[in-house]
Image (cartoon, rainbow, N blue to C red):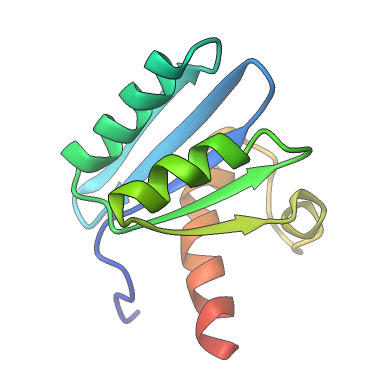
Length: 115
């Protein structure tokens, strides 16, 4: 498989927390961040920058993705907001947290290239 993005992050965003998975050629790292204050969101952005991620795909219902997008834009990190219903409708995909986060970025990069 051709590597489209060397370092990427997939996120599942909820009202109270964000679960993020960074995917590199060396493996993956999953971490959960609170959304209670801006400090926690800044910690998430710092974590993404520490891993030198260039692309972020996030699955969110509602408007909880908006502050994160503002921070990613300020840092110059590419992002995609994906429809949660579309991700759940993919055939053969499990709802296991590790599977969704590690599959989200490669799927969306492929869809992005088709546009």
